[in-house]
Amino acid sequence: MRITDVKAHHLRIPFDAGVASFRQGVSAIAALDMVIVEVLTDTGLTGWGDAFAYVCPRTTMTAIEEMIAPQARGLEVPDAEGKRSRIPAYASLLRIGTAESVASECQTALRRGYTAIKLHETTTPAVFAARQATGAGVPLMVDMNCPLDGAEAIAFAQACRAATPMFLEEPVWPPEDFATLAEVRAKGGLAIAAGENACTVHQFRQMMAAGAVSYAQPSVIKVGGITEYLKVAALADEMGIRLAPHSPYFGPGLLATLQLMSLRDDGSFIEIFYMNRAACLWHGQIDADANGSIEVPEGPGLGYEPDKEIMERYRVS
Image (cartoon, rainbow, N blue to C red; front, side):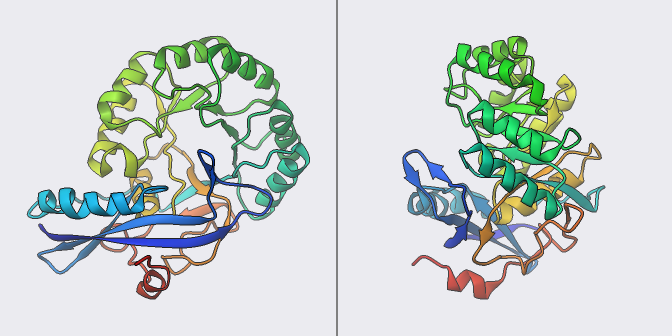
């Protein structure tokens, strides 16, 4: 099976995150901007991909149409068979701020079936409020989005140890400062996760060799696609580092992550942004069930075909 053409579609789907907020730099984001990639093949099957385009969708569209598509035509399409039929999900809460609201959102997420929670908070009161709300048995992760220097990150990690987070994610700026990240891991007393900003297996090799991470976080739509993701997974296995994929998406990138996680019987969670979307591309089939897990699609390619009516309704011309 070979690729005959590649097309890009820019969609914008509004969402409501309640008391939480989603920011990219100084800009607040109130809609999911995504560039969906349609891959046509010589067998008549159509595949779907996802391009990372939070704040630059038009640039991403141009890159796909003028750089990627000409190179992709004629390439063979790989396939793989998964082991797991359902993947446990964690609720990836957006930035909330106040300890009281953090506790309330954690309790609501647990009532909705999630069995693990990630915070995007930068204060110890928020972390301890979440732990008090969830109880000791619920896996709790803390994603900081790179706000601290090394000394600050070590102090924060040490201050949070009693809350027993599963890991502290990206505490240090810049994210590629692996030496400092390794120091935080060695002195902070917590497991460290990073990798959503790493490009290709080569940068992951630098990260792992530096001893910077306990959990590697490849993002399939940022690291270089499925092939590169599999290289990172193999490297992590070789170096004894666990995977915690980055997947706060609702397009084909989420489906690809489900399929990739189904290949591994390691009990890892898939990340689901905790928000109410105005629409779903996949006919409502990607939401966590009452037990906090998501079914791995079984159809051709990534498993589901997107809802064309939804694509047209939210298309950006």
